[in-house]
Length: 241
Ligand code: ZN
Image (cartoon, rainbow, N blue to C red; front, side):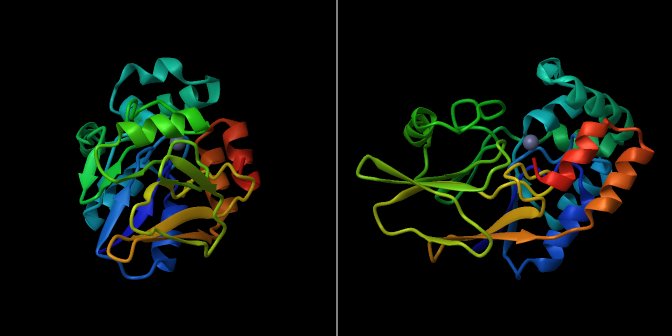
């Protein structure tokens, strides 16, 4: 079974459509949350995922957009963008976001936005959090987003290896290995590379392949400026930070 794995699309329909145009045929589309927030097209992104029958989970921005008090923890720019998002989305978008689970299991894989123990908020960035995530997973493997950084952690006999995938990188899992993998962000990459980051997971072969695809960043920036979204959020798209 092949799944297209997307995370942190952040209401960037131009980036999402560039990924969908570049992606190979897959059996399922999986998303790891933060479908909305920051970007200018929340309804369009939700509509696209709904039509694709995507399976996915709730991120902190999705929870805030659906009315949650997560917005209280946002910085000034994120909060301004979220206040706009709340007024911009339609009722069916809000209901779809509100219906996203915090965790979802598909076969051997658990999908979360943050981490298994704190699916909405925790960033998997340090070795101690990676270890905790492996012990909290109730399936052999996990997929996460939230950091906007493409990365793979592979555990074998208690030792953890970290891989930093580039475009075209393939991770092959051997029997006995467990994996915790992040496809990176479709709509707001933060690893210094502004192109969309996404992945294809082949559950039968045990492979994850990461990809980077260019999109029309200037068009998204123009949409954000027209909506008076915060300038720093507009600018960061060009730098991938
Ligand atoms: Zn995010």
